[in-house]
Picture (cartoon, rainbow over the protein chains, first blue to last red):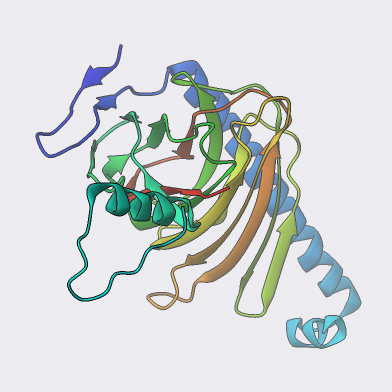
Length: 64
Length: 208
């Protein structure tokens, strides 16, 4: 249930309506998945650089 | 009516003034839009007469009634002056006060910090990635939202953000995305994945 929290100086109504728990849980699961994917990608990149024996500067030079 | 210019001593009539105001209103440019209401997931908010919404401690911020048939496209100017913790921000479109939260959102981002460049197109999701730099730095974004109210067409957005420059070694970021449904949206929600946001947001209609 939205709670009206409109201050006197607002020209339109402002409501407080916290997200429901199921939605928060779904969003947090999606966030965790995203962060894992990014971490996996970063690890793959670091592992590949390590395997090649190049420094980060050398990789940047190769890709520029 | 064309624009009327006046000479010294000429009588200014109401009709002539109104014609000039109509001319100015239809001449193009952008017009701030006042939301019909604002919803925050936590914290507080206010909206001033120019449509600028101030929010504080908001885990989410929803603007209702900003997209209408008057304009096809809209600009968003967003100042996230502080984030309570390291987080990032996603976008949902909404209609009649309810978010569309089906798995219909697509996005692609490109961001850089120092000489490190990252890009990704996350899998279709229940929201679009909007500001992807996971940080607690202040973030300043200008975005364009395309055709949210046009029947039978998808809604698209593109934005660019300054994340924490110059106060930290920050990010330059661009993201694009949209929702693959043809709902006629009248608003949107920005969601912090965790923590909350404090700042300002204004929506402008772009004259057709």
